[in-house]
Amino acid sequence: MRPIQIGATVGFLLVVTSVILFVVFGAGSGTTTTTDLGSLTTIPFTTTTDDGSGTTTATTAEETTTTTTTTLPINTWVDRSTVGQRWGSDEVQGVLMFRGNPTNTWYGSGPIPATPEIKWKFPDAPMCSQSTDLGTTATWCGNGWTGQPVVWEHDGSIELMFGAYDRKFHFVDAESGTSTRSPIATGDLVKGSATLDPDGYPIVYFGSRDNKLRAVALDRSDPVVIWEAVNDLTVEGRWNDDWDANPRIVNGYLFEGSENSYFYIWKLNRGYDALHQVTIAPELVFSMPTWNDELMAKIDPCNATEPVICQATSVENSAAIYEGRVYFANSGGRVIGLDISGLDQGIEPTIVFDYWVGDDVDASIMIDQEGMLYVSAEWERYTERSRTLGQLIKLDPYTDGDPFLWGNFALTDPPVKGGFWASPALGDGVIYAVSNKGYLVALDQETGEEVWVWELTAGTWSSPSVVGDHLVVASNDGFLRDFDITDPRNPEINWTFQVGEANLEATPAIWRGTIYVISRDGYMYAIGQKNA
Image 1 (cartoon, rainbow, N blue to C red):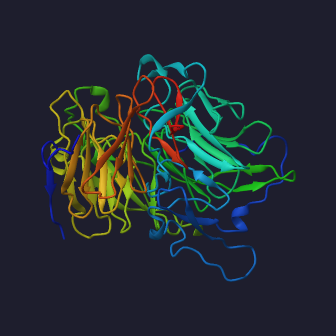
Image 2 (image 1 turned 60 degrees about the vertical axis):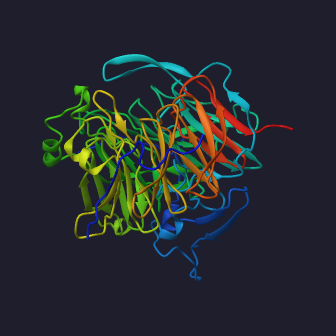
């Protein structure tokens, strides 16, 4: 199948423009003597270059407790040189967080299977449970949006870590598909993606629909929850109490939004006790509501066909961090940027960017090498603002004028929902995105012009992944596709492969020749090269 001609299905527009949170802290079992390693060292930092073959070149910079000269990134938060690079210290190899780094621009390590086959599926019976969402109870299986697993290469093995709709957080051997540790039981679904601590501490962080955000120690005989943050809607916030966003950890701080419509920053205060077991004592240093009177006036009256959508202002996307700023958005369509450059000196973050795109932004914002923002918006409120701007929008957060640079459209007629529900991927001068209408689009990074459009057989919530000269796309009909993008403006389809028996809403994790993805049929699948 060849790409659809430019402009055939997706519209294009180019505009040229010049409180209190109830938190329970824990530090492991028993009384501990905690050393705050954050006061002793800066974050070990590694960048890697991956050509898609599986061979990587790593450069590590680490400041020690001595006074010797060290080499650090130009910006000690998230330097622009890290865009498109793996994030994490040299000792923590793998896919550590949703979209691979704080700018959402690194998607895994090759090679990509030339002839795919299912190597294993986990577990023996589907991962399912019943859950109630906004008054409706249903059976949920597997995992969906976003649901990307952590891949951790350590001690000569590769381990997957992921939450699922069976109310458990699982640990699985990536080679065999068997459990490596006892799962962590939760009180409800685990919907979002987890984060393995990128600084070398044996801790994994994840949220759940049971209103708890957790940190789990991995250096015990079995994993142990050593910290929880608990949403309490009777105390603060609005809308819901889920934690969907992927916890983002930079410079010893955790950045996280919640469906209660608040955004939080914790100083983690990680360390080790006298037995050299990891400890953590997070200190909440900043929180803010993401709604205000101005936003609520903009989203009312509401044209959504589902009234429950109208007043939603939850934060479901994962924070994106670039140099001294953190960006996030809420489901009211408000995109916020905070200046965090003085956070580690005790200076409270301030709003330096505030823009309304008109509709729900659940997908995580992507940031390119120049600090430009790519915002995916859903089309379900059917606002005039969204109809004008588009549903995939490029913004310049540094200009004194109108930040809008270009917009791409995925409009539908009510009650059908349109827009872009997944995060876009950064390619070589091209932005790749998938729409709820069922189209894969490639856009010129500078102009927003449609380079090509590929018609899929179903809508897509799973975020596309660029690894070397490959573009991997999962869709809601259960198919996984691999495109050759050696020439990003003239793609070729390498293969189409069915995975499981249900939707692939979750985003795959790709590591050293294997694609790991959870299906809504209840199973985690490993897809690798077919044996000769």
